[in-house]
Length: 277
Image (cartoon, rainbow, N blue to C red; front, side, top):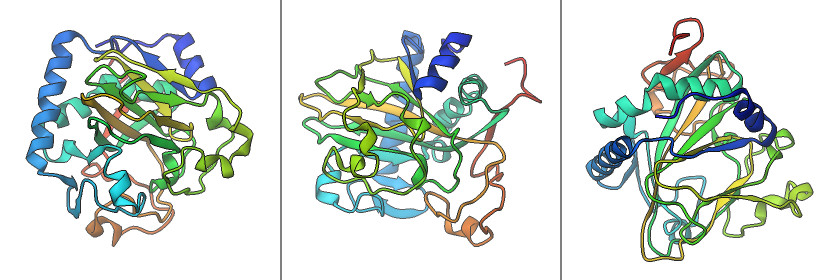
């Protein structure tokens, strides 16, 4: 795993709100990740998230048009909670350290992982932000996106609007069919040239949760599979948004409470205890 970051990479991320790391996984590691994720997805039987009776392709409160959004990608969350192999991958302290270094925080917790699978001929993913949907509001939230297949201009690679994380906010904007819907709220970016992020399988990107990003349609007869994980800075507090938190946990939360339940959001790296990773 290519987990050592340079000062230049950290600075690039903090300026642009994203970074691409080529050949992040070795060929053997890539094959292991593919097998683990494929098994975990099959075990789910289409259930989107543990403890919630929502299947992939159904309306979920973020994307209400199930017919359209069910054909954007299959989305399965928190596979780490239901598959031991994926859990080992997601709790890797080396990835946690990378996320913490890029975000500029001392400690990092898993918010949720996601398998994102664009099927053949899948619809595009409209420009959107991540953090406004989550149960905490922190400008340093970050996600990793690992390509399990080659992600190309033809099959739905990511696009980023560089530097947008410095100007966007926490208003929750529903992800619609129209690619340009977000620009009604952030018109200053409507003429900004986006950066395409094609990646070979085994490469990855990191992006800030407030970086505007999206993805092409899959214009091919093949799959575009990715495994992602979103991270919360340690010490983040509950903002009242339920998002992926289970009902039993929500009953004991009130806005302002620290989100430090290790069963739900494991601390995978902190400078005070894992400095030698």
